[in-house]
Length: 533
Image (cartoon, rainbow, N blue to C red; front, side):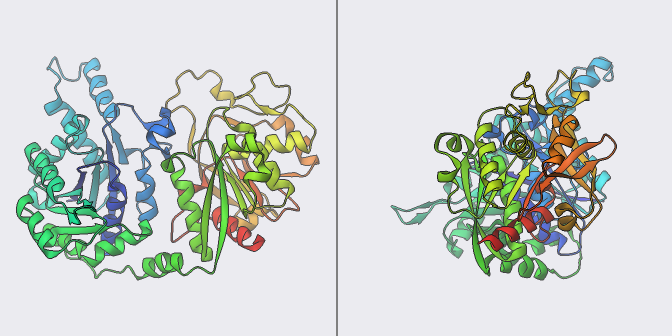
């Protein structure tokens, strides 16, 4: 029978439950156990697909085409677990499933209630993840903060789970904040006490506390937390701020968190082996041989989480090359105002990520043109690829009004246009081209050199594609179409000859990059940036 770990959060949001959950999974994997993870999101949206990145951050896409919470990206980057649509459940999905059954008459006239119907649906989804994955341990991260009204059904389901599976098969971890008051020069445990008290009122007694803190926790502080929260002292785990999130598994391992968990479950496993992670990730991250500056030109620059996987994949490229990467975040609208010469001065590489809508598009196109003309390494992703095509069509092929029908529906030269199957789609949620698709790589191209494969599978999230009516014209002027989705003859990769590194892709390679296995496109992108410097 699978074992279940529920991870909850208290005091404030953004404490890093996703990183903590992924790190716990990592140290358990290092003991030879098969681990999977699940995120329970309390918002009523069915998925984050239609949510503004400024509100929610990045939408992470799985191989099977699910639009999910960005924490699933952490799960895949830290572990060998493969995420699917089953690994993310929202309030919207849960209620939608229950209401649909009620409309069909499945409940035979019963009154539908939060308990037992909603909580039973939540528990069913958790068990489904265990069944589909075949994992030894399922980590379930409960979104939100204890005390939020939206999270109550999920917490109630977590409480009931111990009754269903047995207390030796369920463990509760609570992530909390132990603030340091600088003026008083004191560490305060009261917020943690109140958070645990709220959790206990719901019916959950945490077995382990992970305490986020900027100062070390003394034995005296740990004893106080242990006493007032009814948690063993050794199960009060200190989680101090670190330079890199990839150090967190080592921090947890150093406090024998894996041993505490295995002891609770009465599990026997092989000795821990995190040497490879320590040597190939953490040590390489800090023992760099050089520094490069990469400009990320986007429209959601103001929020760190909007391009979370992009920033992580850039870091992975740096780890792979033992290069420290300094990311310069540039709002594409600033390039429209001040010009690329001023905004991109002194950088070694340019990356233009995905997005939707016309705001800042001209700034992205100008940034790409600047990288193209000045032989600066360039990587375009999704909309970044479409902007690269627009720049080339306008400024090399002479098609001055070349654009996308997303921004200019009546343009005379629609080099980017809506997919045929998208033209009659009315609903926005879950209707894009989503998930993993095969891409055939053309021989003797930069893409072939980067991937060292003739066929790759990459994840997509978009509605618009390159318009094949313009392929010959752009090819004639020097654009290379080096990756094709053959089933529908869709362009996946474009590149330029006589340039050190100019490549743009319709898919999202950042979703398949890991700190110990950088995606080839990012690995070679950072290498090209280092060579330029």
